[in-house]
Length: 126
Image 1 (cartoon, rainbow, N blue to C red):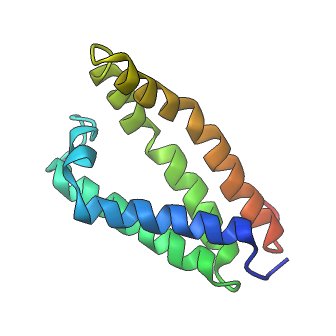
Image 2 (tube, rainbow, N blue to C red):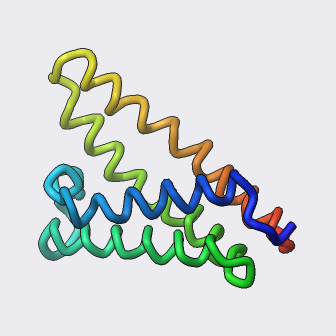
């Protein structure tokens, strides 16, 4: 399947929206960058935002959809340490905020699976 399905469009929207937010409101992203990464958190925030935007652009086009979806799956795995940091940092916050932070952890699994399914459905094997 090479057409742009609703699922493909939703994945593009998720990636593009998240990538854009890394530039419009970078501070929350800066706060979850693991401290052992070299350089400034803002640099990592911008790099991850660019990666999300690049994945969105690749998934949007049939010729690059498979590669973009595989890259998105890798990106969803790569940002998991930031979600772990957020869950640890927010463990003393009010229950609603803790719930958001903890819910992000298992959410990575369906995101990775969604990206891999998109890659498979684009005509390749993932």
